[in-house]
Length: 398
Image 1: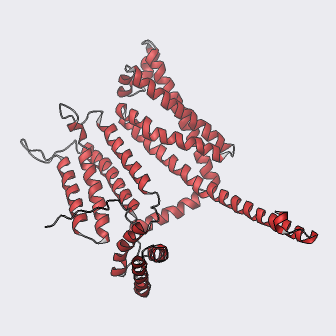
Image 2: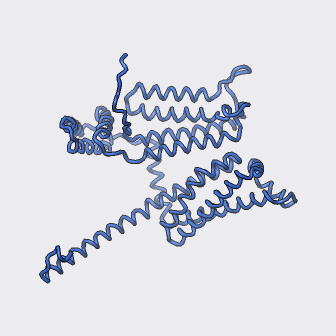
Image 3: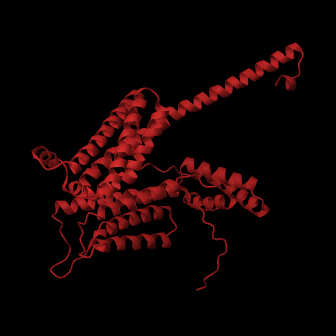
């Protein structure tokens, strides 16, 4: 077997790579959540006997190995989906037992496990956000992605959107490539694709795709602009006030002497958070961050309620992102249940904020820009017409 030396190592983004990263990300998160829930329901049952314990980290390694084999062996499009699922599940099985490998006592329940799992999840989210960015329009990358899409043409099964994207990609290369051979190749491929177009079969949407489409349609009917704005105002203001009061309560318990009232208040706080009060540095960092985030959420919610929506979302969205990526790491170490509930609520609010900005505000901004452009064009035409009537050349009028 010859190992050839490849000089051009510049990476090329795969077509629709963001979808496969998202599949792996969702599978990873669901695996950890379902696995922990199943273990808790079964009393942390084990596979094995008195001398043998088959830890689920082994199943994670098996899933990762199977995913890599599938991706290395098969060139079909389904192999990418299956590989993404296997890799996501494998990472979930593996990272769930991280507590055993970061402690001297192999403690699965160590408080440090949850922040590590959540940190890995956040890193994967950052990778997904980076991959979502549009790929550069260079000839080499476009040809890579065109050859990748050709598998759908050979299978005679491709959506109309993907087929049009492939035709546009090949047409772009056929006119912009500097190399004549590359232009001819792109033209030949484009001719083949257009010749096979009548034989293409539109893939039927699966049950998950139909469910997502129905959910989106239902959400658009239920969450009108006024309702979605009211939801954002309520959740941001209430969540911000709760965060500020929560930090105020913990700060009060940290400096107050023991009494009947403080003992009652301590009963409302988890043991992990009470133990963290003794670490002044980390508690101060969390107090400053969570208190600031809470105030920013309140201000953002109030501004949205006052119809200053762009300004309110520009404050609320960064605050939610900081809370999800930084504050929750600290809370996970102290109270996992509280962190999970907060994570779920904040994620829903963040998705709602992004949806509100994309659906309503960005469309309004585009319409305003088009209206301004049309007004400028009308003004320019009026000036040219007026200049022509008084005998002034258009260049002098402008």
